[in-house]
Image (tube, rainbow, N blue to C red; front, side, top):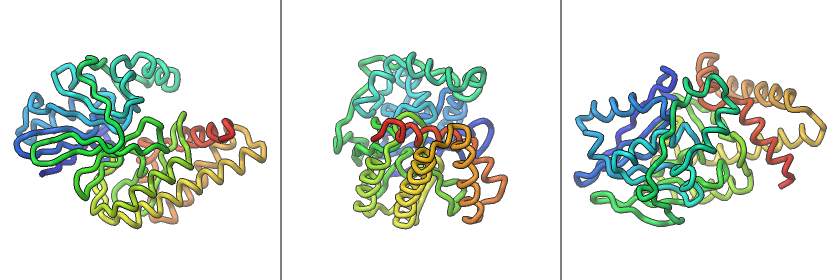
Length: 295
């Protein structure tokens, strides 16, 4: 098996969103398609490896947020099969509701940020249950149900390697700052902890993060990230109980995360880069929404 990390250079910035080209026994698959706005960059990266896009017959998406699955429909329309969580199927077949919701959030920036999300033909979308395997050449890709960031989230396991989507957070340029991926509407710290416990128990040799790249200090990363998830929840929950409003909650969240990042050795340039991939105001809203629901 060969794993190729494809940098999609989201918004012209390297190291924010990755797609992974998996090669085994003469077969090719993608794990994560990235957004529609980086489709041409993805296609160019594939061709740069002397692989024709038509050779990619399988596309695995961890969940249907636009930075992970926005271009999946294009590959499905070319004849690839898209594999996803059962709760993600309808959004891949008909992404109109997903796109409408995103447009309400991003407004005039929507097209520039995310581009279009094409509908996948229904016959080209396959739901995978927890622990279900898909053969790829000489290997198997195993779907793990890993909620916490989203209820419809899979991590994909190949041997001692795990492609984590957003369940293991964001870590840019091998820094020691782990940013909690908590965008609305389905952040759940209890489910998150259980998913991370499952990953820790597996003793993976390597993680591949969508944001961004290969992680080899797996035990440290997962243990620290589990603590970080609990930390952001407890902080926002305390603000919520104290009657802190939405805007102040966002400011508090950003200030606290900035301090933690600086203490971890992140400079201002890398902090700003992280904000392009995992906006603190949106994460604050995601954690607050969990608190508002009283769960």
